[in-house]
Figure 1 (cartoon, rainbow, N blue to C red):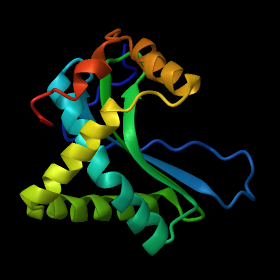
Figure 2: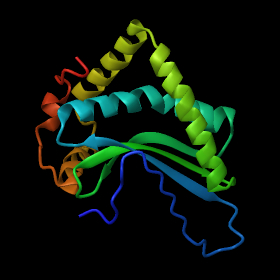
Figure 3: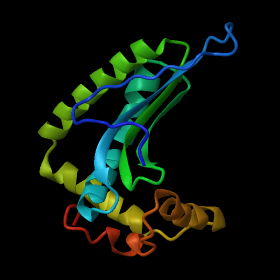
Length: 171
């Protein structure tokens, strides 16, 4: 059961008190809901979006804007909800409101970049994602993480990885 009802197009911001008033760091976890883990097409599109946006997020927000040491863009599965989305995390000495503005500016620029992307570049991203799906786990920790994500999401499709790269959205 979800603790709150997220409506389409909504914007919620939660803040928490900082126990140490001298702590200069803050963090932003920006979440965009993408869909159901149970829908293979939505999963593939979400992973492709993360594939396209991960490096530019780091480059724009950490390298160019120097917002903070920690910057990441990844898929985030909501525990027990069979839902997922895209999450951008920034740890910085800047305030969360400012970080949110910069993340939204980045998302606007990515929207334009994706719309203007040529078919050859788009195909390269799809091929890269398909290659990543086909890679076997490098160690036991990776294999455990893969299966644990199924358990944690409540969607026990342990063969998901074997058929994920055949989804029509990315083939």
